[in-house]
Length: 464
Image (cartoon, rainbow, N blue to C red; front, side):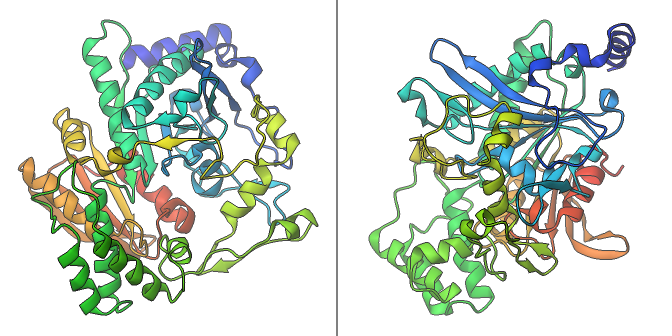
């Protein structure tokens, strides 16, 4: 660590830090962006030049002292959502203006305490692409392999940051991406005789860890809040494979037709809608209704907002509009394939097909491997998430702790500015689980101040 800081300081003194970045990837200024002192970079890393496979990235230097701040890799879920786009709804330095043609500063950006690297992964998400059609059939292993290849090349391009403390974070299906990547980097370290990734921690928000149990937890949550009759919940338990924390299987049989019917009925009753699709749009936030903005309004210059309980539900919607502005794509050095369809935060029309069986994989063994190499894990969950409810995630964490004989060392409320913000559980000195009051499936969007507080005070600077 000391040698790394010394190397960075000497190099920057002699050559200037910016020389080591790829100048062609530096963003002069994004359209409608306020003036800032930190630097931004974006572009492509060719992870497989022969196949024409490239991952798109957006890198933002820390707002102060970037050369001595850690670097955080941010991945979002889906699978198939854009991590770069996600960077404009809570974690990154900007969010869109209300008319979506400009940007304003995000007061709770994680760049206040870290350099942040957003990567569109897997292939087919955001602006990442391949010239080989077979590369769009992806899964956990191929995604992890591509990310490792990406990072090795990225750090060669930006060697100033090779020696920084490294954190890997993400939300939702990043509960697969992040642990798999962390283990790939740790495995690389064990075989490398030169460069080693300086992994200091992992952070997961509302992560998919044991999908079938997470899905059952949805209906447990609805029943506990009186959103569905308990009789219906008991029917779901009878018809849905009877799995639990102790007999979860990666190869669990598909849900039966009677199970799927009961679950569909439960979702529609819970949100008082007449279609399963309508219910699934509501699952990510059990109390707030989604943004109902229209692209026509933004096209005509109108503002589109929907502030509910202190935050704007239309931020992701406006981000999609902003990312489809031609001048924005040019400033990002993006869309070099000239997509024949609009950019979308999720569900790209790129042909991405994710391996279905991978979604059921039990991620506790991957988390166990990370902890066994003394890398801390922090998991946080919004208590208004109906997609991956915290009640299910907490049981996974308890299971993980029990398997590793980690004792519960803290069980208490956590506070920010003298206000209770949720509950804190620590197991041993490496595993932390935190609930966030009033947060939905995306804590950095719905409770950005609390998300930054957790990242700063429990991930980067954990209490001693």
